[in-house]
Image (cartoon, rainbow, N blue to C red; front, side, top):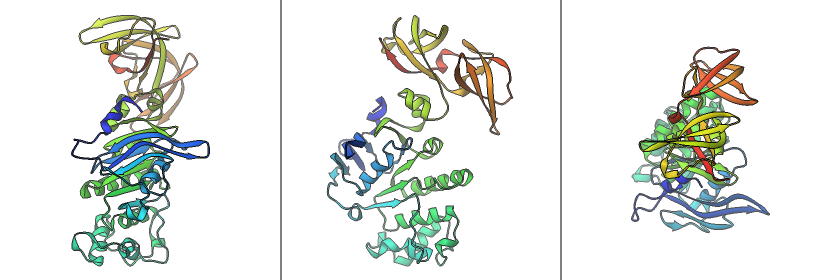
Length: 369
């Protein structure tokens, strides 16, 4: 796990986390789908697992829900192990990727289905609870409708209302918006976050969409090869990635690696001169990291920090392609056979100079090799 993993700790020894995974591994034969995973989710937190296909995020969610049992390690809710506790007794609500609404039931019957097995919270009647949740998800007049008559976004909200009906302690969402178009996803993620915030319910969300993860989460776990590579708030993951994988997976980034040739001391920090394929680039480094000449340094610069014709470190590159995205244009450059990405408001062409200042670079690895 990245250095930010400690941020997953509970707020105090007397306040156990809502969910804790402690050394959890799940094997299928010789393959570890989840590999020695440890993290904690605070009560009331919106916690997102994000990563590429096959990274273990959905298996991790299923282990929390109880649909899978760990091969080793422990899953705890509020400090208590849930080993052997079936899903229906874990007090969790689950929204699946395909929503899994019952086609032979009305919307209201779908929402109230879980109340066949548990009383509505706070002494409400069944009808009151269904009406309350349909109001919450902005479908107050849909109780008598057929689920098949609803749009994909409406079905997603009905599925969420159904999961919330029994008043669970924990809400689990497994890529609930992956089948929707981009514009609808953007609208619905705002609604999902609003609902979660209004209820204050602890939520674990799975997505492969990095932008979605950054937009709605209190903290994000970036998964790779069955374990979290970094666990941190969205801004930290974006601005201070703990590894090259996180830097390149979460949003566009430009990663460089080279040999430190000199260190220039400054007040409270230092600037390393790094030889990257014969070009000397200047990078701010923390004195506490004890970076020294001869070390190999890996760092990244986000596209928004690459400036045209400006910056302390400058590179001459050739425009390969440009994608107009509305507010900005995403330009891919060829620099000595490697791709760089820059974002600009104006179209670019031909050979250009881009640059960055030392503080615009983020160090993601130092080795003495």
